[in-house]
Length: 363
Image (cartoon, rainbow, N blue to C red; front, side, top):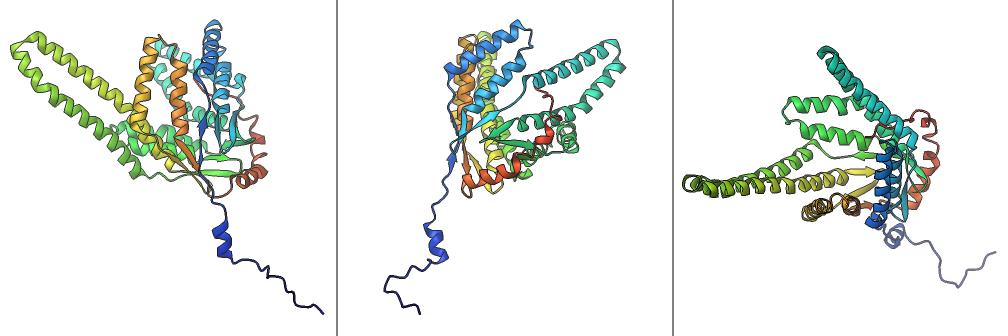
């Protein structure tokens, strides 16, 4: 017969206490460790060998470039890997060159043949882009687990052909809708191992973003015209030379403002897309800032111009670092458990795709 114990009770604490003592899952910021000096050596060798081989080495150059960027991009203690085959990339470029050559030859031979070749090229475009998306994601991995793309050819035709055509016919009025459909197809059909991405950006959010970008650009244009317009008209009456100088200043201001508006679009769209993308139950957050983006773009252009292009790899590294390090992964649970569960199913998911993904359309 058991005697009652004098030791303190070791009863299991209530469920609420367990929840309160559980360690919170912290956000995981993306980081980029690439350096301009390192990448310059890769860039200059790639450039010289591509020139010497009349472009053939460009496929190997792309693999070296992507491997460098992927290897230097990390989140939650793990980096990405790129497994693309240069021969597959070279095949895609040969196919693209052949298609363009056929189009040019047909157009020179006969307008009717040129029209038929153009139609064929347009119809083949969604299939080629679909295959390229499959190739790119299948050859990307994180912690040894490959990404993938499950989108159908019909979806590619709708999002790469139908919606852009409707946007053109509507004189741009359907452009936000077309872009939302494209990003929804691209993100929702992607997967990491066995876990699928999802996209939650609404059509209204894209129209709002486009209207903000367009409205700010047009507002700046109006301010410039008002600021320079009256002065220029008066000076055109009294002093022709001064009027020409004022007109040149106005054109320069318009050009500068348009140039500064491009980083605004880049910032708004990256934030919109990634703030509405999820991987399973895990979310992403992008906090790019227009001022910082504009400063990087402006100084990069100055650097490239004044160094006759030699600053290009440093400019690419600066912009890549800012875009990547503006991203944060917001885990809903332990990432170690998530990666392990994805690996169990995902490691063999793409085994049958090896023969299918034998080229990449990438110019």
